[in-house]
Length: 277
Image (cartoon, rainbow, N blue to C red; front, side, top):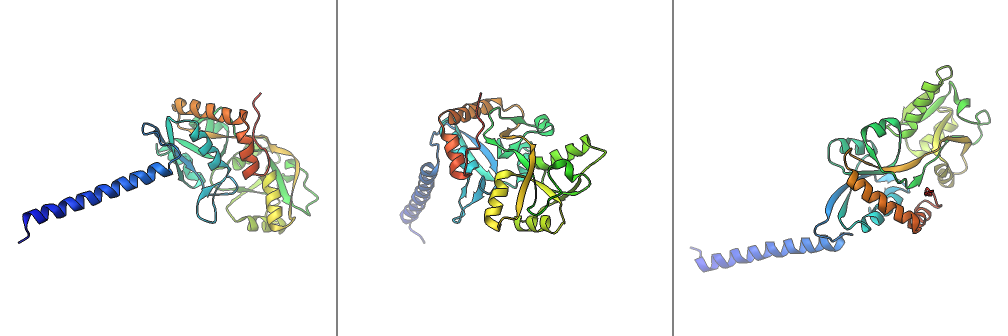
């Protein structure tokens, strides 16, 4: 039979071990958090992990990019909040906001009428996001969006703003619509499909075209004026004005003190930050 005193001693050691482990875990969490205010409200932030240079995993599997750096800078200015940055597929961020799982969506969201109707947008934009028509470098017959009438134009799946604006263009030009092709593929496949005529054109950021040409050789070019002149914003559930105003204040400060421009240059290569009037 086990001695009662020994049993109590063993139980005490087990309890102390559990307590020590719990304290160790708590200490680790405190040390790794960028905001150690015990009273800070946790804000679940939904972002992506495959959109370089904005939000992606580095060679060590760490989430990084311009989007993440800006979020961390905002979080540092708001001691009343602690950002819990979580990874979602782009198309699932809005779903997560709808379901009450996400308090702030951060994935270079552009505004449009449908999004404005469903979600609360930040008032402070944090990235200039102008889109252009892009074609294979040897195409000479396309000089702008109107030249793509009746031709095949690639749009990504997943509810991004490019697809929305291409559809809106067709609504406004019923006499000469674009043939919008919805697909998802690698950058290399996209370039090849533009070169072999699977697509006649697509819509991309000018800086993405520059980056693709650096990575894959000079194979694409942008043509014409911007198809859309746009900025990017954070997304919130309707009714979350308190968080929105706090984050807007932090973004404004980061613009004014030059931090946002420095982060843009560091991660994107140039200053793509909107300037307040």
